[in-house]
Image (tube, rainbow, N blue to C red; front, side):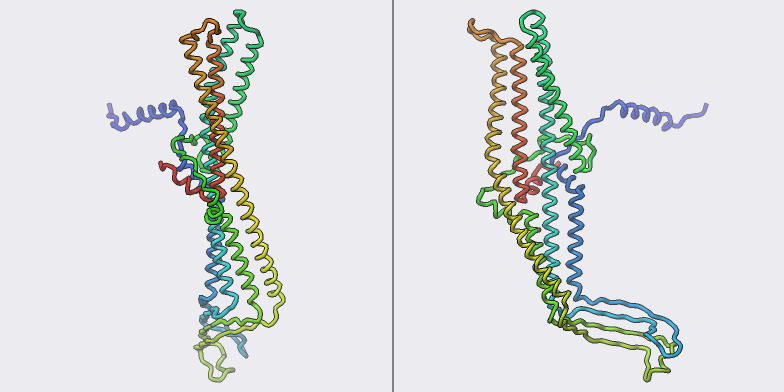
Length: 443
């Protein structure tokens, strides 16, 4: 009987066992920390990648403007046979180098290109702030929805128990059909609320999946990883922070400088000399008939000199200068208007925080009161009221109290979410949101 190799005897059963375990094991959603979600969103964002490309484009434009003073070197050849009087310069090899030496408009063009680069970088910073705001807001909202869904599940189970009690009481003649219907209506409303919340969670998961590049079923928020709410600055410091950190405003100001310098450069193209420097070496072919038609012909030739131009009248350049000046004025007014709008927005968001904090306080007190009511009902059910004139509480009262407590708890979660989202939007307007998000615990 042939011997079976050891690996063949054990590998096949092991593979079968692993396949069975893999099939039987339920798929588990992976927890993704707040910091990881923000980091993945920034890495995966198409808007950020486009902004990075804009930065590269602006950097190339700045280099191009500066490199006008760097010599351009070309090597070529124009080989050919000529019969009769030679036309052109058939050369074995030629090399030329040209560069700008003096231009009254080029320095302004360089400053304009550098300002455009600064605008692109500031716009990139603003795009990152936008992605951080979207990811953070959706992440926190998904975590809140998850906790609300757990509370609704508990609330629904209490509603089922209440419906069961009402049916038993109605069968015993202790309550009317209206109370059974009311219990059914309450339970149906809870089920509808639960379905709406599940649909909303599905949409939030899709948004986070699109932001982070993960699959929808691979995103489960980790509550402990969410940092504390950002602390809003004092009202007196908001304008200074806005002018210093807001990327969109910085991009608008840099765009103003770019257009102003462009207008200056275009205005200096008339009645101002422009000087260029050039060097050329040519090796003429020996088999052509240059020597028959030119005295003292030589094969090696070298030229060096300058090219000076003085534009006296250029209507097109003058019109371009007028258009550039108008663009600069438009950009200046647009930036000033944008600053005013941002100032109003931050003032409005800052003012709404006080109201939202009071609403949050009320919701928390109502939740605490509802929990204390549940405790009081349970105590009376277990120990009695101690007053024979007071109707004793029943499990029916317990279920109603528990349903109300879960309802107040969900309202508290909603109030917490609204306040957190308003604080995020305020930091987004100020341009300091990414600094707050990066303070989250790292995985």
